[in-house]
Image 1 (cartoon, one colour):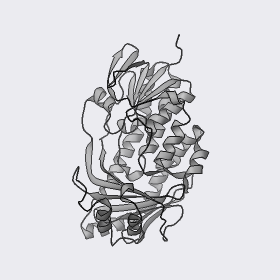
Image 2: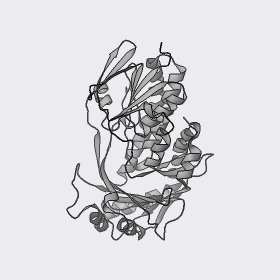
Image 3: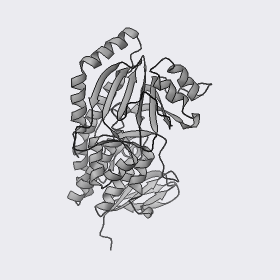
Image 4: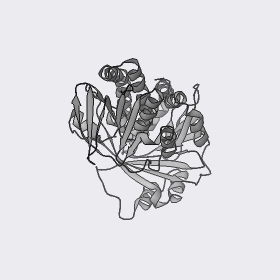
Length: 379
């Protein structure tokens, strides 16, 4: 007779893997069904702010993350030429800020869960709810049954579409590029995330672990705008040729194959994102722009909180209601704040850009306090 509750998790990214680990440690039978045939993350870096390293500490992973990551101390905003606008200390908490490759974080999570708890190459199709059970149908023909289901399958979540209707996410007028290189610019300031704001464009870079530099760029673009015929690298070299010297240096030092591009989307925050014994997590529940760097961080928070709620309530429906209640106001605020921050990058008129830069400089203390409040949260 099965005594442990079985939790079906659809999606094995950072949020799904964190949920699997947290649930496994709490004594649940959690199984992840992931459509890719290999657990891997694209070549990109993330900053794990103190609200996220708190979760890693509770999962006994913080020391490992520090070992493969890089400690971050400052977040600096600059004009495109490199004139400092705001310099925010981010290491004033009891927990560190760790810059880490997404693949390294992903590996820390899934390698601490038994291998058999990940069923790869399985694409979710639909579900059925039957009294206290939920049944998931996969395109392979496999049918699995559990006490609850968590959709952690990302921006275009199939679980969300089945649960709430297939409404597309909202395109936010920006295309992004991300790159990885071993080249370290001579003007790089150790421990810094350095971000540069221009006319309808932006660029940032930070050090990850193992001597890698991660950089990201964004520019106003039409949705699904194709790459320039000259290729991503040359297009970026032209776009940022007259910016702070480290920026064209980083682009030049990056292999074309190591540059990935995506369009930026979010969803206006709405409830519910749960229905009886089915709920959503991470981007499936509350996709946000990357402007505050909180996407993966809030997914980690979600995984930890939903596990605590399932521990406190034997009925998954009640647990998921509590989970959503605890998470909605925080994630709503971050989605909206991320969008406001993104709109600050839309200015193209030089006079508007100059006014924005002045505004950022004047509001430096307020921006610093906002960061502190955001990162002081402990799930």
